[in-house]
Length: 218
Image (cartoon, rainbow, N blue to C red; front, side, top):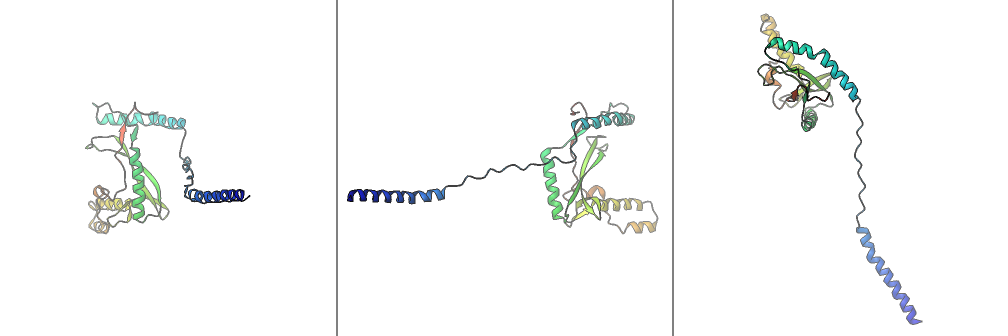
């Protein structure tokens, strides 16, 4: 009986000891990390069907391309002018551009970038892409209920592009107006449009790659 009692006592102690030894291992075991699900981005309202894109592309082909081609070939009769139909922008550069806008806008005191405006433009005769259509992007901010393109001034604050283009217009008008009108124009800052919008203060984006068919998707 004594041997039996000792056996059961030793067995009980062994079980208790083993449990004590295993408990820290359980506590130290890492719990499996919860699987992080990717964020689902909803399609923006501006997405259009490919069929609609094809339709409006064809509208331009029918209603605009012949007019542009005729006009440009009158300017240079010896040239078979091919109308630009699309402009490529590097995807990563566009992402970087949007991040740059957000950064500079926040630093410049803009609470909310309201829109990204796309301007239609044309390279001048001195450019290597002479007479080619192009576009450039301008971020806008709300100014008293109106969306206005902006850039970052020398003081680090956001300023409207209109403030310098209007000042430049006044400066040009002052060259042909009376002395009194010149004095009035002189009240405005004498910015130069060709230089003020260049450099780190500008948020205007261009430098895409334009191309005619046949490489177009439509």
